[in-house]
Image (cartoon, rainbow, N blue to C red; front, side):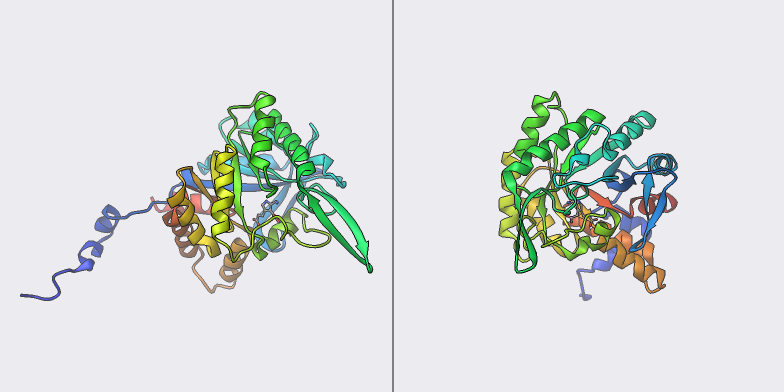
Length: 334
Ligand code: PBG
């Protein structure tokens, strides 16, 4: 009898046989491209810590959208950089807010491109927190606390104004307690019961958001986000967060960041039957891009492996700054 009898290599011997037995596939349908929209005109400004990612003004957005649509990408996630900021983030929920204007423009140019609106206040508040804050000074330091229930009202107004502008999906990223329920009620009452909520259910207080805060000009001016975003050490808590969002009416559950939290993606996949979204965040993009620019890694191979890993872990879709590149690579490899 020859040995070994079990030969795993039988199913790896050619590209054709490997594709027959492949368990996970990544397609352009899985990808969501984030876009940063800023005030002013004629702006296409590269983000220093995210080479290849830009802030666009409303007038320069058109070319970018054409590229996204031509590549077959079906959804974009919008972040806005407003001209003025205040304590309650008024620019987030006014009719002519930057995200609302961009949404109207995108839907008029490309009605079939899904607009996902990030619903948060940190880009719009002068203190950079995701809700309304109560601040006090002590010994020369400013301290503050984010007010939960008061913030819910502002976030709901933001979500409703985004839906009124034409957003197809509302994606609240603020991590206040009860945000899904508050926004669900607000949308329903305003005549948008059909608009899904993609909840940032499990969002960790992560250093991986560093480059985003430069891109969106949203770094907190005092303190940090640890009283509302989750401790990276916790996973049972992720189940509690996701469970409450499900009970409150969330339509999709997100895990963010992705790379250091693949176990959480897998766990949510096993425990819940809603679609799972992985957010491949700014710092994850920057790390790969920096190494790629040095010529230290094969960018295409690394990104493909990373995004495939997120799908294998259980994600149904991925928000990634690499969406355009990945869509191009998938097309070229056909
Ligand atoms: C807004 C928000 C953040 C990100 C998405 N929505 C920043 C934060 O919470 O500090 C981060 C996205 C990224 O890093 O790519 N709250």
